[in-house]
Each structure stands twice: as structure tokens, then as C-alpha cells.
Length: 339
Image (cartoon, rainbow, N blue to C red):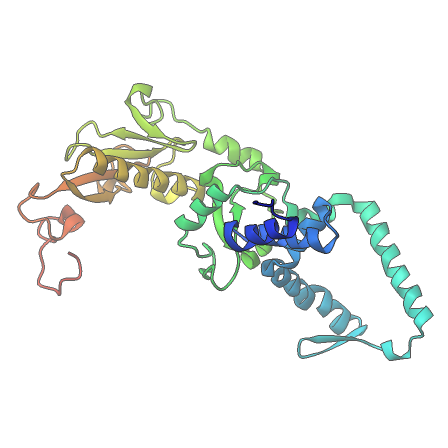
């Protein structure tokens, strides 16, 4: 006779054999429920997860050392510090009832401040937005090479967060082109209190120039796009499937692009590269480039990036690539550093 598994056996089997982890959340939640006799609130489960998150500990460790600890120690003389430990001055002189009274006073200070300011005291952590989905987070981190895009530190060394370039609280969009990867330190230092009038930023992205070829492009020429840029096939292709990636905003050249626009353009370049190679297996390489200024050959003064597919044998000798922009400069006797 086969007996049904007991609750203990079922849980043990799930934890040992069936649990598939994308993070530590499942075992933390089960352990929290077990420790509370089988039931726990969302808040308590969230607290249990938070207690396991080193990025939060690191973040508030920086707050202690660089802000509150510095004020209480150096400015007020209420605490002293030795190594990584703080000491309350005169704590050994306090009677138990005096400690309790002082703790109650601190709790009252906290309650009064929370009553006065409300949720605003945590805006630097909340930032007025819902959590970024796992798939979007992964795409942003992958694009950044799993490094902070400001200081360059690796995700192996410091936790990397997904940040709105144009802050969400100031009108920034939940679009992949408006996300960047920042370590928690750079993200905290950036904050969301930039005094730029982001109504002007929004209007800036809507700017189009009357009479501009790319501002007035026919919709039937667009083969791909996102919120800030689009793709067309070049009207005078150098090679088959020669494409242009163009910001929707009227901006003269690459150096006038914002970071979200650069992200949007790079996303389309990568996407087109993959699509073109799937549709044409003869494509073996690409030239990517742009003309910035009349002297560099620019004729349409709306930024556009050329994506030019290359095929074996399309020129007699491809060595030198873009160096051939100036006749005779593509060939040289230096070591093979530009193959």
C-alpha cells in the first residue's frame, strides 16, 4: 500500500529535489513561514528577504559611515568610533530606566518625523516607480556588460541596479532606452533631485525640423524602430541592405544625442545586425559609421548612423576598412593592428 506523503516529507522532497532557483526567494519564504509556525505576512516575508540582501546592508553602511555616523561623532560628540564600531558616549553611566526613557524619546522623534513627512522620507529609495521586471533588468545589465555604466565596477564586486536616466519622478519613461546600469553607490549619489525642467526634455524629444528629409520620412520606408529612433534602407546603398539608424528627434549629429537616444540606436543596430545575417547568409561583416560635419562629408544634417553589410569579395582588399575614407590611407606598413 502506498501512503500519501506527510507534510514534512512533501516539503523535504520539494526543497531537496524539486526546487528550482532563479534567486534565494523561495527558500527564504519557506523558512520564514516555518519559523512563524506556518503563517507570515507579506511584510514579514519581505523583511526576511531584505535581511539576506547585502546590497541593502552595504547601502545603509555607507549612510552610517558617511552621514549619520559622521554627524554624531565629528559634529556632535554623541558617539565615538574605533575601527568599524561606534560607541555611545556615557552609555555605561545610564541606568536601565534611563535607557528605556531615551529609547522611547528616539521612537517618538521617529514617529513625529514620519507624521510630518510621510512617505517622502523614503523617496530616495522608492523613486516613485514599480520594480523593473527581471527580463528588462537582465537586458540592461547584459548591455552594460554587467558593470556600472558610470564607475565601471563589476556586478561581482558591487550590486548593480537598473536606473532611469531621466528620473521616473520627473517624467522619465519606462522604456528600455531610458534605463542604465548603475552600482548602488552611483545610483544613490545620482539621486532623483536634478532641477532640470523635464517638461522641456520631453518637448526636446518631440522636436522635428520642417523640410528635413529624416524628420519628414515616409512611414512606408521605415523597417524597424522604437520610441526614440527608427531604421530605413539607404536610398543609395553602398551594398545590399545598407541601412540607416536615425533618431526621431532632429539633432545635427552623433555628438548631440542624449544617452537614451544612444541606447535606442545601439539597440536597433544590434537587432538589425542579427536580422540581416539571418536573412542573408552571405553577410560576413559590417561597417558602422557616421559623418559629423560638412568637412567629414555630411550632407543631411540630421544625425544618421550607417550600417553597411559586408560580404567576402565585395572589394578586392578590405584591409583598412574606414581608413579608405581618405584615399591612400587604407594601406600602411604598420603591424597588423587594424585587420
